[in-house]
Length: 193
Image 1 (cartoon, rainbow, N blue to C red):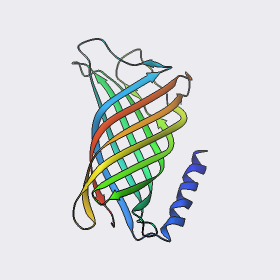
Image 2 (image 1 turned 120 degrees about the vertical axis):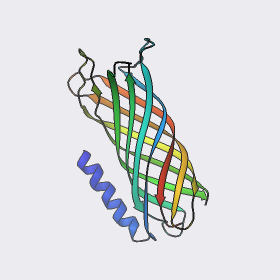
Image 3 (image 1 turned 60 degrees about the vertical axis):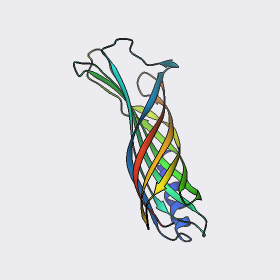
């Protein structure tokens, strides 16, 4: 299934590039508020020793504007982490990934609205004895964002907010992992407007 999604996305990019004016690229980082649920139960630690942080990385590559519209077709890679750590540097980290396609739209030149959807997988990690994490069988993820596009010419900086959601089933335990994240980001963008 994963191979068919990737192949379909590459074909879509090739078809839209015929009417596109140029390359689109953006990449950056963000911080935010994550929530992770395992089998419907929210993961949290009541101990004051644990701190919690959410972070994300994102990359989009594609073509646009398409047919003279302020619309871009992109391939998207997204990563969101939800980390709990204590004063002894022990940690539990829930990581969800998105690999798929999306669209970017500029309702006005200063504002970018984007959405991506695709295949998801997890790569959880821990240093705490007694906890075991497994890879996922594969799942579904999506993200939506809105950003101010600041810059001149073809280069710019995106300052924005995004929502990310991922649903995966872990391999051995068959536990359902739901992760959501809302945060702010900064990204470098290279595009034809």
